[in-house]
Length: 380
Ligand code: SAH
Image: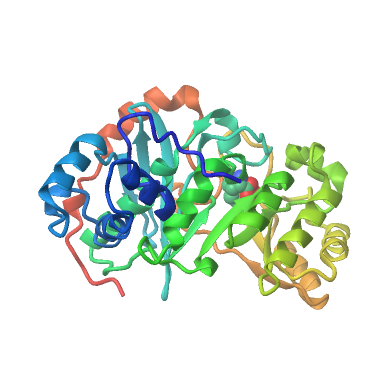
């Protein structure tokens, strides 16, 4: 697995380069490789992207960086804060495409949910992002740019020096269909000179792209979440159509390979609760059988409805009964709390359909919030 980044296509952007790529690029520019650490520290830790301020670099290097490698960030189009402090941004990348990013604060952590693609090709029937189809992969630059931006804005809003403690690739897109950019971006998140997040605090969520799960097992020690949603092929073929290509038996083989590569880990299986579709006793038994003997946890996600969907959320007592059944078999099972409902920030509600985008962005512009409106306040 190689790290593919088009280093020759100017301008270069440093944000998405992992330490090795950055050192290689610096060497290609006649610089010392250790400058990579200094640069990463400035950019990712201190949040400084103006090269003029990087006083431990020579003036010549600073000028060279400014001309060869200007740092580009996604642009904030909408910035919304929910009653429960969940914060959602609509970001524009490359002057046209919109992606969404959500910050979910909790007592002892701040989880940032980021996007890996503009749109999604996977067509999961219960997911709103699927409706807009696939536009393009995000670059590692645009992926890390989301984290840089969130950290910057949250620091300004008084969330402390390290507001983002966890990053989950659960926004728009399928991260394992964009490994050439997602993997180096994850490297930067976990690098001590980057964001310094531990491997337990970076989670890649996949619908089950098994060849890329194998790459991940070989290349990248991060937490893995698998969007299961059904434990029989007939139903999963409908809910998560990529199952037709990589059915459950292959998915389970890839899960076992991951757990062999990282024996201390478990896999988080996500299961959206759809009324009358996948929430019966029979379905719970299928999950138990499928995950038997595996180091697994299950996260039950109440379905978030959106306009135009026929699916409904399972009743609360049905979700709890499902949870109890799984727990009785020894499977650790949580029910995910819905967050940021008043701003549509919950799962599957990220971004509307592309046809609506022009109208949407026109109306959104008026609601754009200036960053400084949120006076610094001590949150934790
Ligand atoms: N493509 C990746 C990551 C993005 S989806 C994946 O499939 O894992 C992140 C999670 O949100 C997935 O588990 C997905 O199935 C779930 N999700 C999508 N739409 C949802 C909805 N309307 N309600 C609840 N969960 C949803």
